[in-house]
Length: 287
Image 1 (cartoon, rainbow, N blue to C red):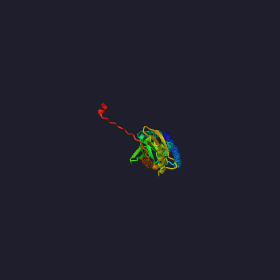
Image 2 (image 1 turned 30 degrees about the vertical axis):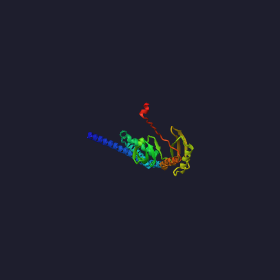
Image 3 (image 1 turned 120 degrees about the horizontal axis):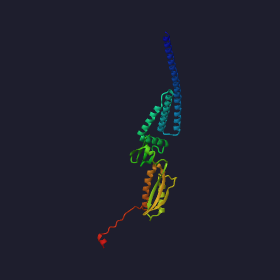
Image 4 (image 1 turned 180 degrees about the vertical axis):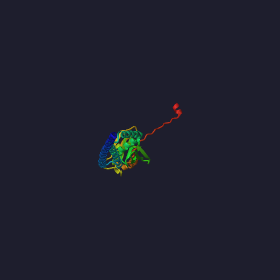
């Protein structure tokens, strides 16, 4: 009977210890879950505040709407990922292996899409720094044309002869870019040769008159006319006038045509290279 009582006592003690451990574990887990929920609640509110602040900063910085939306979304994803790791760690879920797997996956994806990521980064730089905008005429990467679209990965250009060219933003952001139409006014530069037997002062006066009579030249900025070279067969004159950027090609063509007509009317010749051949009879050469 004594042995039975002893066994029952030990069994009861064992059960008591087991339930105490379970209760302690429940309390410990409950406190961890409670703290995790508090972290989740506070973190969510904090992330919302940070995203609103970021949106205001991007709006004041006049960042492109597409870029601003993308940056805001990426920031939100990153912050929520950090919050999720913090909550899991507080609950007791191991995050070291998860972070290692995530880092490895990120590296693999980065190597696989290296070219695309380069274009993506270039697109962000172009949209944020704005070296050109849609509608600008640019010269870059050996091509020139009007920008008709700027995407995250590519920039679309329409050439003067109506060809569409798609340029990767990665290469475009790392090359020299000439924005031809960035400013309101453009200068038209013409090099005009005249003969050595012509009067330089008369030629300059004709060019001045052409500038004054042109409908599209800006009269507030005086024309510049000067001798820039003495070549083998001609004297080189430089003729510079200013016009609105949208009138550049119109003014250039109009001036060149007017110069030819005015020079012809006033007897000023425009020299050109010519080759004179003198053919002699073989009989004469023998003599």
